[in-house]
Amino acid sequence: MSVIAANLQAVKNDIAAAAQQAGRAASDVTLLAVSKTVSASRVREAFDAGQHAFGENYVQEGIEKIAALNDLRSRIQWHFIGPLQSNKTRAVAGHFDWVHAIDRLKIAERLSEQRPAGMAPLQVCIQVNISGEASKSGVAPEEVPALAHAMAALPNLQLRGLMAIPAPASDPIAQRQPFAALRALLDQLRQSGLKVDTLSMGMSTDMGAAIAEGATLVRIGTAIFGARS
Ligand SMILES: *Cc1c(COP(=O)(O)O)cnc(C)c1O
Image 1 (cartoon, rainbow, N blue to C red):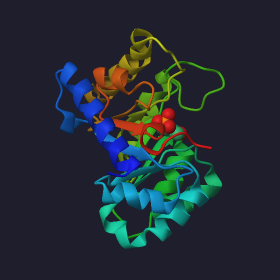
Image 2 (image 1 turned 135 degrees about the vertical axis):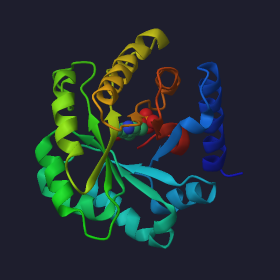
Image 3 (image 1 turned 90 degrees about the vertical axis):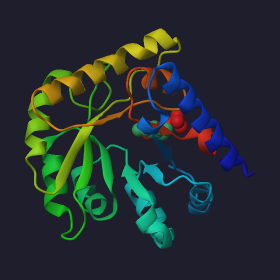
């Protein structure tokens, strides 16, 4: 078995164990393989090992990889998980299936306008600054309901839920607190009538805590592809 295939299997085992401990089904947690800085040939290796959802952070790099793996396009889901500037929305709207880190209505409006006719609606999440860090991107929690309702009205987007990258914490109890807050915010959106189902939270070092608090999608890079240079 290749290193990537073995790592993927180990991550899936960890997801299953965390889900079981939380009384959840492992199939309720989607594994997104974060392939930023990883070559197209290594992404293909992960695909061959059964992984079909990949996350990219940089527009140009992502588009080049999508082109290099065009033969697999109908069988791969491509997620854009990086920060997105207005001048890059057209490229993202034309190539990706999901966008995770929307933090302004203007970006959502551009993505909806620029989504090519004939492509499925772009699946989107709002990035929330859940730890309240001054330096971090993401919307303040109190601004999420208004943004979510405005985005849900855009024709070529489907609002799926919320995404966060909490401040690092090493203790599992401390790790869980911001994930619990994100989950409460998603519940609030549901109670206000929005059909949202996605909590994009948890990376290589805090995946267990995220799954314990209800993550439906974990974004894992290092544990699958190794340390990035
Ligand atoms: C890089 C990245 C990840 C993956 O991080 P790892 O620690 O390598 O698992 C997840 N989410 C986002 C938004 C990232 O930029």
